[in-house]
Image (tube, rainbow, N blue to C red; front, side, top):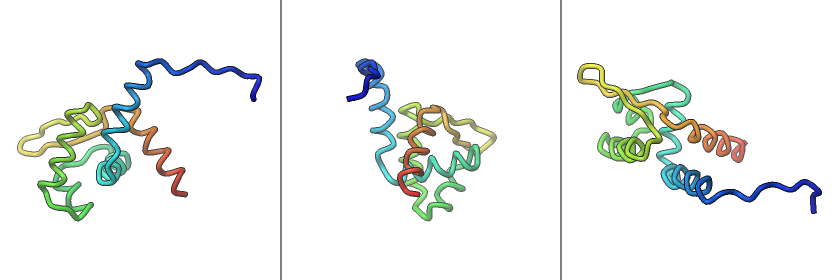
Length: 101
């Protein structure tokens, strides 16, 4: 056993992290996050065309991620732009990338 002692994670820290992991636990949501990390922000149209899924499917996942605070959104006329709203999501994406190298 290591001579270093690490503090046990607090209940709050674990709950907060679990919230992010639950929301990102779908492959399509991870792919959405990947697009947004690369592009900064994107419209629903850009996302569903890039992922080659139906608009309704992309919108459902985007709404879930926005509701959970993972994404932020802004309106510009008739367009809605999504971006990353919780930096912890980028840490998850980084772990996924490292695990798949």
